[in-house]
Image (tube, rainbow, N blue to C red):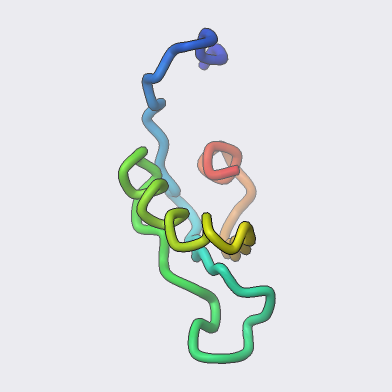
Length: 76
């Protein structure tokens, strides 16, 4: 789809069809968090909720397992 116009607050429809993603605020897989919290959906509310715990630290790690396809591009 075309890039959103500047100032456009709409959120495009996106889905991970052939993969899974996890979000972590740690630099390492070791420890309690491991891979991080599973990212269940790519809607705006889900993304904001997943990123909120990482905002204060300013660190985000994404783990992705699956095919590199349009769903992966939308995640990135």
